[in-house]
Image 1 (cartoon, one colour):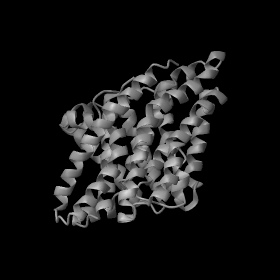
Image 2 (tube, one colour):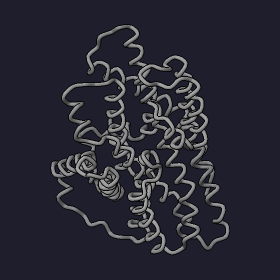
Image 3 (cartoon, rainbow, N blue to C red):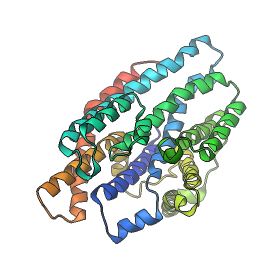
Length: 352
């Protein structure tokens, strides 16, 4: 299944992450940047991604949810792993290698790791253990941690479905795991590199809609465009600001994740509740290519900033941002067309 409005949410999620990394990487210091860093947590874009992943992956395993008594379905986890690997690993591997190659040029610049450090992270990233390596030494190219967290949970989801055969028991297990992940901060001080709360919430959203078949009521007010836009704006504001109003950051992120869950459920109804803010084609383009944008944005931002400083060009932040947007769009489009699409085709050729 393809949920068009969920692609909108993917677009918003990757925009939040790119804006955050641009501010931190280019050291933007103006009133707007200070406001964003002081009153918002743009990193919740990753958690929105996680909720979407948990929901969509659960949908792709629908045959496993329904037929755990069929012996043939015991092979489903291995087929699922193959499909996800072929779909996601090639683009990730390419950009890991690019980050490694750039370390020979950028090593030491603005905190960018040297080749020896990057090679170690390259190996851990190829095997989806990047979050463990990143916890031993944070670097600007540490954004691959989130891909590792997703894969580690991808390994667990089919096994959970097979091991627990009653939907009620599955739901109870997920809720217990959800609260344990909030209060027992796995990873210690680097708990945020191991957070998987969003993925669990995404799976619960799937269960609510498709396993327990809870009918999501129609909201007449959201059918009016201006009210829908206002509701979407308020949800996105609450999403990024919730962590700042909690003494415990993990709890704050939990509230943001719950808001993400609400948005995903509304998007999955496909009733037009999630707005594209009159930018449908742009937001849809960003959402569909969000994975490629996520992979390419840090190398592009760092390389362009290095080039600007090397040439001693005194450019306004707005000009630098515009350049980066164009370059990210180009490289993400190339990645999408020549790596992602062939990977998707190969993945779809494997039938569950």
